[in-house]
Image (cartoon, rainbow, N blue to C red; front, side):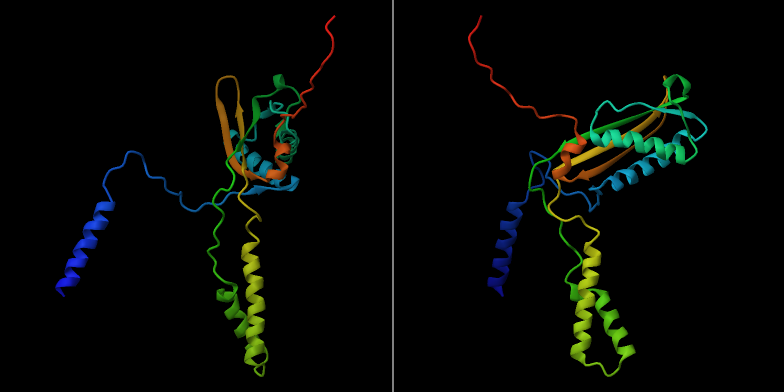
Amino acid sequence: MKKICIVTCLLGVVFSGCMTPYSEAPIPTNFPHTEQSKLQAAMHWESVVNHLAKTIIEQAGDKKTIYINEPIEKSKFNKALHTLLLSALVKNGVTVAKFSAAADVNMDINTQVLKFTKDRAPFRNSFGLPTLLTAGAWAISGVAAVNTATTTAGVATGAGAIGIDAYNWFESKYAAGEIPQNEIIVTVTASNNSVYFGSVSNIYYIADSDSSLYSSNAMGKVLKVTGDKE
């Protein structure tokens, strides 16, 4: 008993010596779990615009005449956003002017593409194994109710199949592959010369293979010209 007490005290001293109440820099921690949509199709772009239009209308009001300025960044995404935003506003009963001078409010579209480092921490599935899903229990009770003569092995096989389907159903919510390096901040503002009537910003992942759609920066070739001087 005496030896156990001594060992316990020594371990306490060792562990207490490893932890201090002060550090020279803040200790990095993770944010609470969040989810972020990944843009992978033009239909997703339309969904983004519909949400932006609805929010900006609620903020600025639908009784004002709006003019949508051409985006400064001439990416394919921004051009599509401009066109889709025009359609969304008109569909929601907003008067959209052809010229800035005829409008009460000017609307601006701004996007910022951010590129982070590779190999960011992957998504960790918290749902567990398919056989542990509640759907497996539903499958067993359902099969037993329909055919009481079904063998236990048959019920178990059916439950496993339904369990895998349920697992895939849960998993389908999440985008395949690693966490993308590229993200985009999309902001729409409504203002006149003196005040802002509304502003809304959203952040999305971009498929790394589609990053060229979100940037107007064209990569050119450097040509080396040689020859005699005149």
